[in-house]
Amino acid sequence: MNEVTVLGLGSMGSTIAQLFVDHGRRVTIWNRSPEKAADLVKKGAVLTKTAEAAVRASTLVVMCVYDYKAADAILGAPGVAQAMTGRVFVQLTTGSPDDARKALAWSSQHGANYLDGAIQAAPSQMGQPDTPILLSGDQATYSTVELLLKDLAGNIVYLGNQIEAAATMDLATLSYVYGATVGFLHGARIA
Image 1 (cartoon, one colour):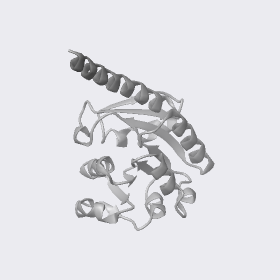
Image 2 (cartoon, helix red, strand yellow):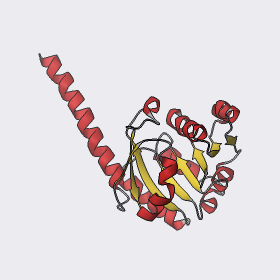
Image 3 (cartoon, helix red, strand yellow):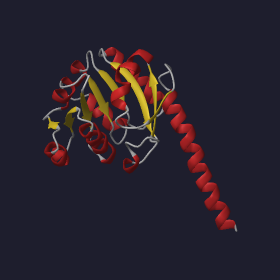
């Protein structure tokens, strides 16, 4: 497997697509605003006019968009659900454990194998040996795409078959980080 589709070209999605291009993958991209794709197309990525065409282009589909509302709108576009049959769908959009369960149900209903992920880095930190990405879902599915996903991060942590594991751990670690930061700022203000 050397081909991958990336849906969503915000800061993180563009970085994901660029890393796949840099590793010599055949990359198909789609974004609601196609002008965001210009630099990636110059570097060899193929831009499609529809999300359906992008999904059909590759057996691995990676999505990273603003939120699950945006993700659901893309997945609900004409032909996308039917195109997912036989694909591996990796959702890297930040979401809740419930979002992960719903995405697994949707993917299963449409014949796709699903992995849920959480990126614990900024776009500028992607592609490094210590960049952490949490993933959960079917282990056999994870094994088929692990090598490609290592283009994005050297510290991929597979958390097991329980689909909500990545979202749960992401929520837990972010709660700690933000809680510690707020506590520090509050303490500094008191002092």
